[in-house]
Amino acid sequence: MNIIMEGFLWIFRFMTGACVFSFINVVIFRLPYRESIIHGKSRCPDCGRKLTVKELIPCISFLIQRGKCLGCGTSISKRYFFIECLGGAAFVFCGIFFGCGMSGLISLKGLLAFAYLGILTAMAWIDWDTGVICNRFLLWILLLALVSIHFYPELILIERLSGMAVVALPMFWTVLLVDGVFRCGDIKLMACSGFLLGWRAMILAAFLGLAAGGIYRIAMLAKGKHGRNAHFVWGPFLAAGLGTAYFYGDIIFTRLLSAFGL
Image 1 (cartoon, one colour):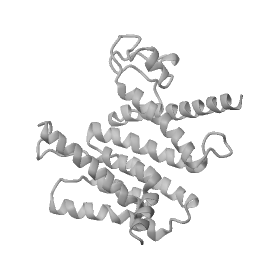
Image 2 (spheres, one colour):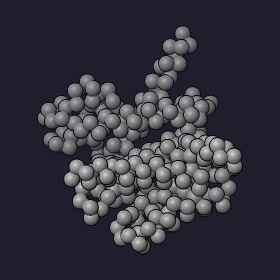
Image 3 (cartoon, rainbow, N blue to C red):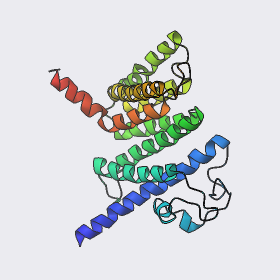
């Protein structure tokens, strides 16, 4: 019986995360058009029909409707389904990594991590669509960084300030030498996240993000889909590196030091 209840609880956690990221879908869809993310009901982007409650169940509605609008029959972008599933998986992972706490959902540390993943997700998709990293996401990251001081007192101020500089400054100097290689939003993202993560985690975040973006860039050039002089969107790849480094940055850095006897 306890196993069944625990299983239902994990399903509930997954659906909680999926619901939050369903809202993030709204943010991604509306924010670039300067639409309110609070007021106004969800609608089909093709026929404009307002969606009913049964069409707004995260993950499940997409499967029941077979990925199509019930009104016009137009295929719904798989992105919505993917992001909702990503949110569910992220919430569950944060619960496993940081524990579930007294609430039965996830601990406060887990909620902090989940909030950061949510911000990164919204920022990355909007950057992918528009090539712009909105300043409001950077402000939210700084707010989370201030909140995290209470939960991570071992990450002292000098380490946070070093985190702001260790990646952002080299990126800035690179832009001075090679015009357009990074955008202002990329640099500000790494600076703000550095205050949250500290310099150790930022080294891993930069390595993962730049490596993934570089590989993708090379692949697209090889296929002729990107021009050599075209501006490249680094935000999604940097976000992936930052999200990974939030959980494993300090762990990997410490193990590397141990491997080299330092």
